Image (cartoon, rainbow, N blue to C red):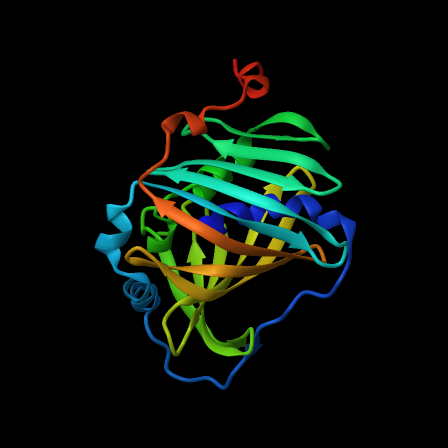
Length: 254
């Protein structure tokens, strides 16, 4: 939840450095479980569908770093059902970055580009990435899911699952064979820098209330690795006004 919505914001730093992305290695062919069964096992492992749906908003804080550059900072995320989000990042050497989706408008403000509204595919993807119940991998969002193979991902046996969105584009999830928990994902998104692919690894699941949440994420895009650590997470205590776009964005909305 927390880590999903900050993932694509970290792509801001992707053009700065180069290093090789991690690859998943295929194991020998074997009988594969149904993709929905794999997803449902993850849902059960994190606390269950009822526990996920019982939450209506969240507020998380953590740290974000780019090891190759020595850059680091703080990240704060607000989310609410069905698809509201606000992300605030403060990075040494970069400044303050904010990004959000208010149910209609996707937007960002950062020192490199100033205030911008998301349009077209970027706006559609902002809505997708703001899905508060993303762990459920709703069939309305992903009408086609398929187990592709059993692979070694991040040194762990995992099932590689293809998720096709309603627009025909594809996301990839990896689920740990032993625990059922999602181990990571591969996503392709439209950005101001063009189409960017990203691989993320999710680890160190901890319990917050009734739900398990990964507290460490490593992300690689365009050869850059970013690391996020979740420090705090609370539910159902968010002021709705945090999802309002800032004045600079409101001035762009017609």
